[in-house]
Amino acid sequence: MAADPVADPLVVAGSAGVTDVRYRACGPSGVARLSGLSRPPPGRSAYVTAKSAQIGLTRAWARELAPFSITVDTVAPGFVPVERHADVPDDARQAYLASVPAGRMGTPGDIAHAVSFLASDGAGFITGQRILIDGGRSLGS
Image (tube, rainbow, N blue to C red; front, side):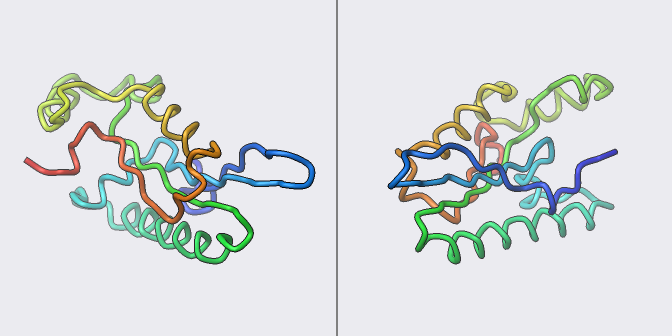
């Protein structure tokens, strides 16, 4: 069963103490590419609509929850080859790679580092943002 791209955006991580409880809420897009919103593929209007809703929800929650020291951000990874992408043809991978200015595919670690930072106290003043992790692909050619 596939994850619902709108209903699954929230991950709450960490608390700093008993009297000063602070939460970081990060809305990762999971395996879906939010960066695809700038270049939506044909026939994917439902996907683009769901991702747009997720961004709107992130921004609304950020506004509503900021007074409680809760931050909400969305992580938008580019194509990260993992097990579920084993059937992606090599020519499709190479075409994607050719469109990435960084010259490499992303890794799960790239995404994990960003999410870890957003869940840290160091990101306490970042909220309502969509963080693109796509090696510059969303910048266009």
